Amino acid sequence: MADLERQRWERLLKWLKEVHGMDTDALRLEARDVPGAGRGLFATKDIPPGSTLFEIPRKALMNITTVSPIYPSVKEGRLTSNQLVTMHLLLHKPLGEEDSKDRIFGPYISTLPRDFSSHPLTWIVKRKLKKVDPCGDYFLDQVPPSSWEAIVKLSKRFWKDWEAVSKLLKEDPTIAALSSRPMLKMAKSLDSEEYLMDFLWAWLNVNTRCIFNRIQQSPSHPDNFTLCPILDFANHGPGRTHIFPVIDADIWGVPPKLARRDSRAPRKADAFTFLGSSDYGLSAGDELLLKYGAHPNRFLFTEYGFVNPLTDGAVTTNDYSAEVDVQDLVEELIEQSGSVAPLIKSTLEEAGYWGEWTLHKSPTSAHPSWRLLSALRLICALERCSGEATLQTRLAIDSWLDVTNGSKDTISRANEDACRRKLLWLCETIRFRARKDRLSALGAGSLPRGGPDWAPWMAEVIRTLWLEELEVAEAVLACIHAGMEF
Image 1 (tube, rainbow, N blue to C red):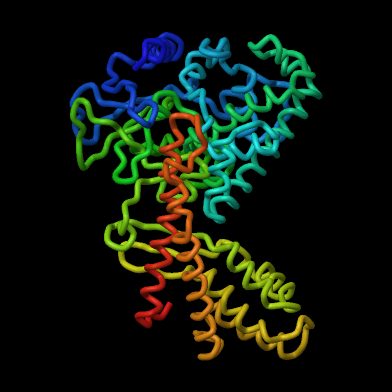
Image 2 (cartoon, one colour):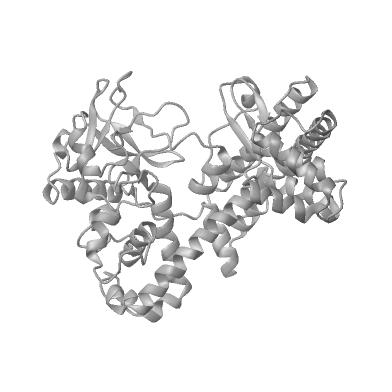
């Protein structure tokens, strides 16, 4: 690691030890540079299976429990936990290459990534602000439609959070006064694009580095996340994970402290514990990877800015699960149905079947999702009807509902045949647009001149998104031509 990054790592460990009482001398891990991936977490010694890798004191975590006491004037419910932690990072963002001056979490904040120029959310925010970004604009124009829609949804979350936080800071000057950044103490500073981009930095750090951590009674409560020092040095691995968080989830519906009291997992109650695998150990020099979840590349790209590597034929020949979202194409089919299109949409919405229409390839099969099949069946059942609510349309919808709730297998043989033809069209369209010019348009010669060092890598990332769509479509096509029933 560069000297500056090494110093920040050492200051982080000192802070964890001296301020929070963590036994950092027993730590068998360290941060190191990873070519093409920033930094990573590596074993400094052999680690036997089932070992405790590290235990982070809970007061050193950044979440609603540790951050909300800093802002007593913020009434409960005014900000979400995500917005609150993001606001704290904004107020104490390091300037340039300096360290954060936050007296509470400064040594931790100083270790967070500082550059998100290669993240797709940065590109779309800059585009809205009309800031010059040739590479970002180029790549936004090259992503598949499903990825574009996912980026748009992500940006809506971002702008909603910015509106909530900036409004609060303007209304309550005592909060901005707590900032360790002199200029941010003035509410009028929040109107500048500079501070909006700083908020983007803070927001992306929270969105890309948070991990599930049980804080509230309900397992689905949005407060159940945290930023965790040391852990966020770990890179994603598409295969097996080396780091296993111990979660207070064994007695759901019971407050965390009570559940922890009954838990048999050997750990400190005042620490967030991470274990190694009980099936395999690690050797000195091994990188510890953390699987971010079994997500398709579209999700990984949108949320984190990277994808799992994919070679030609991997989807059809290897143990590789992949997915394609076909929202744009299904909406096109609905629009083509003419005057009955509003009825199709409203029926799907009322039944809870609007959106999330996907094609899948798992190691054992390729298939459309049930939601996609249901949408196609309804389109085929109604496309020859008028847009008015008639006995014919009512009977068609009732028959469709019988299939969706499992009362019968099909609407009719003719409906199933029509559904397969539309599914065939979907797959062929995906294959055509992936083959046409997207895979070839991302070559080194087509990239904007003078772009950043990450541009060739990002071209490969987007090429991978298109390749995944191509191979999933071809896998489902093969199943259709083989006569497989879905």
